[in-house]
Image (cartoon, rainbow over all chains, first blue to last red; front, side, top):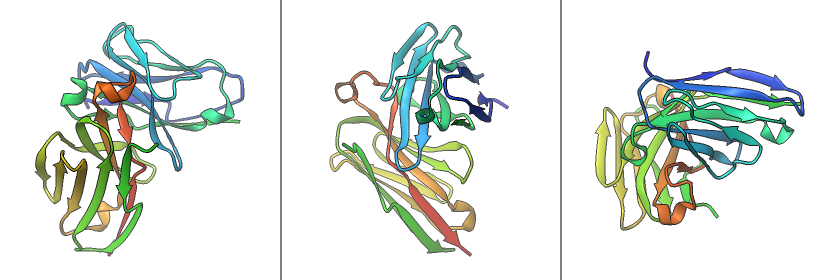
Amino acid sequence: NAGVTQTPKFQVLKTGQSMTLQCAQDMNHEYMSWYRQDPGMGLRLIHYSVGAGITDQGEVPNGYNVSRSTTEDFPLRLLSAAPSQTSVYFCASSSTGTRNGYTFGSGTRLTVV
Amino acid sequence: KNEVEQSPQNLTAQEGEFITINCSYSVGISALHWLQQHPGGGIVSLFMLSSGKKKHGRLIATINIQEKHSSLHITASHPRDSAVYICAVTLLPSYSGGGADGLTFGKGTHLIIQP
């Protein structure tokens, strides 16, 4: 089925470990973005990309890196995980950003101990 | 500073009732989105509005650009409508400080429809 695929669904990391959250879409959407969802805070934008080779920071980018080598993939990297990064992460895509609705992945629940 | 405010935060109603969830925003936007999130589940986009009114099944979304206000209505509510409803906006570039294409979210309305 067409959509946004996020892996893994669940992950436990130790403080200081690194990992990559994967996000792939098969709708040829130009725009992709990563959000984190925390209780009482709502969803917040981490990084976004308006096309292959172009990325930019959102509201809470510290501690995260992204790259966009292809239209389909937009991985989120945690270089040195911290307990403050315990959250649920969502990837989303859209065909033209503001002009169309967003398609969200099913989320990754990350716990850093 | 909260640019997107939703009310109520929590709402419990009986099956069949007409439901209204409100969203107010304080800055210029290019679009407003209503999203639905079931417990432990993913996020589904219900509507994207830049003006007027949209309807899909029992769901109706309206927006008043001058008043910076939007409402989501559910007619003939059903227990399967129980979810968190999230209002989000796409800020105009002059307000976004660089995140021009990202969404700014309200904190959500937790809706429970009892049978």
